[in-house]
Image (cartoon, rainbow, N blue to C red):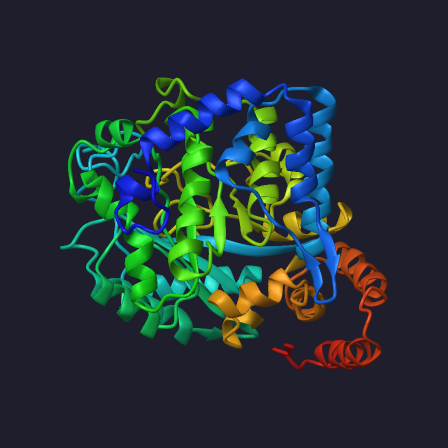
Length: 479
C-alpha cells in the first residue's frame, strides 16, 4: 500500500503506485485539458508573502513527462525557465568533488570501484594528501566540496571520513578556504549521521541509483549496498541524526527513466510528508564510461532531449529544490539545461583519488569519464558569457539557514534578497584572487550590471561598499 508517511521504503516507494502512475500518464498524455490544468497549477503565483509555487505530485508530473505534444513540451520548458528565474535567478553555485578513497566492498555493476575489479589501482588519501588536494582546489578558487568515498568499513570507516572533514576545514592557504563540505558516502546509522552533523557537514548526498527494487538487487549483487530498504531509508536516518539538508539522485540509464522519475518525486514527497522539508538538492547523473564499465551494456540510456525534459520537469515539480549537474555532462548539454532548472554545477572536476594535486589528469583511479574537462576559470567565464552569475556562496549554511529555515525563505522568494548579493560578493573574491585577466574583465562588467538588480537600496549600498573592501583585500562578507 502506498503511504508517503511510512518509514518503510516499500510503502513510500511503492511499485504498484508507480505502475498505476505510469498507466495513468499513458492514458492522459494527449489529454490537453488535463495537461493545461497541471501546467496552470504549477505556474508561479504572486502573493502577499512573495512568489508561491504549488509544485506537482509524482502523478501530475508523470503526465507531463509522457506528453509529447510539441507545443505543450515548449510550454513546459518556458514554465521551467520562469520558475528557475523566480527562485534561483541567474545564479549558479560552483563546487568540486573530492575523492578520498576508492576502496569498496560492494559489487555494483555500473561502478569501476566494485570489489571484483582487480586491475584498477586502489588508493586512499593520507591526511597529508587530503591537505594537498584541498590546497590545489583552493588555488583554483573553490569554496565548496563534495567528498566521495567507496564503502569499506576497514579502509574507509566513519572515523576516517570525520578526520578528512576536519583536515579540509583546517586548511587556510593564501586567501583560500573551504567553507562547506558536502558528503556523499554510503548509507549508515543514525549515530554516524549525528557524528557527520557534529563535524559541520553541509548536505548529505546519497544517490538511489534506481528505485526499481528488482533491478536494484540485480545491480547490487553483493555487499552491504545490496540491502535496498536500508539504502532507500537512509535519508530518514540522516534527518533523525540532525542533518537538515539531504540530496537525492538517481543514475539515469539503469532503469526506464519514467519509472525513476516517479520514484524520485515520491521520495521527495515522502521527506516533505514525514520531516516537513523536501530534499535540499536533486542530482541527475547519467551512466558514463569508466575503467571496466561500458554504458552500452545498460539498455535504458536516454537522449539529450529526454534528459533536458527531465531537468525541466524536476524544476516544475519540486520548484524550491536545488538541482545539480556534474561534469559527467558535456558543455553543450550543460548549456542546454542550465536555464531549465539547474542551480549547481561542478567545475574542473577530477574523479580520481588524488587527482587535483597531479599536474596531468590521472585516469587510473577515475570513477567515470569527465565530459567537460575545462578549467574552473574557463567554466566561470563561460557561465558569465551565458548571463549566469557563478556563485561561491556558502552563507546560508554558515548562518544556519538550512533545512526548513532555508525552505521557508525559498518558498516566499525572500532567499534572493541575500543570495543575489552574496553571489556577487563571492564572485568578486574569485575575480580578485584566481581569475584570468579576461575573466576578471567579464566578471567586473557583470557585477556592475547585476548590482542594479538589487531592489533594496540599503542592501545595494552595503554590497557596493563590501565590493570595494574586497578589491582592497578584505574577504568573507555575507548577508
